[in-house]
Image 1 (cartoon, rainbow, N blue to C red):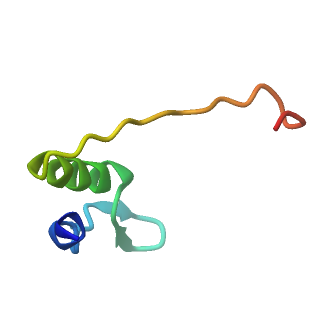
Image 2: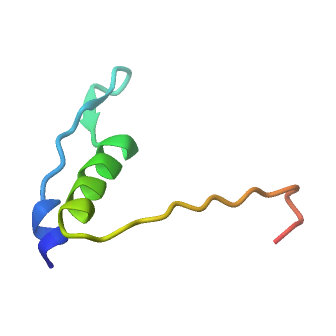
Length: 57
């Protein structure tokens, strides 16, 4: 619950110049969430999957 409170607002630092709007970037979300997790003694581990082809699941 504390992490959710800490992350209730993330600034919109990204800009779409074509459509003229601001958005929250993935990097900004990760920075905010990771700072709160660290503050509360919680670790996060990122894991990415790579697909070899469109038919692989």
